Image 1 (cartoon, rainbow, N blue to C red):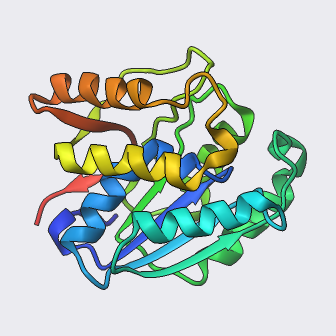
Image 2 (tube, one colour):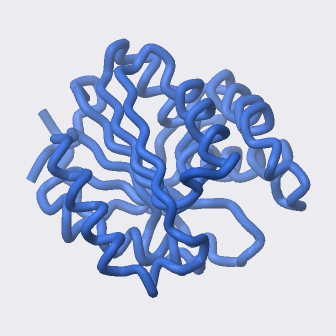
Length: 213
């Protein structure tokens, strides 16, 4: 099993069921990692949105959230909200993607998420990335499914400011949603920061993890 040593990361994998999942759930953490590790290899797989305007949003957003990284983004075309009915397809897509990468850290959704696409992807991840450090990010949305994350990643105020700015800049298709606003994103980061003993943080649910040198 791989250990999580953030300052030694060489390759980061980002997994999302939908365009915007990754930046909403882990955007400030990804910004922090990429800024600290210029040239970091980042490989992202998003299962839905391919061939729609949302794909262009996602590609531009991930480029902005991964400054200075060696970034490759794959956006597929699964119908939104249908992953349980496309389980074999999603499993094969994840297996194919896995053969292109050897990450030090995987960021994906987590298995207690109420959205079926988020939840089913999170269940698939450890069946494919079997020995990798894997953290499940939490996705703010209307459903009351936020659980207490056992792992908190401290963030600078600048990283949180930049996350919020980039979310609004790159996802105009989402700005009409009632929860897609500065107060919601900053409020959750502030709560996680209080729990972490710092100003801001993002929360994660580890699937499997060794920490150390």
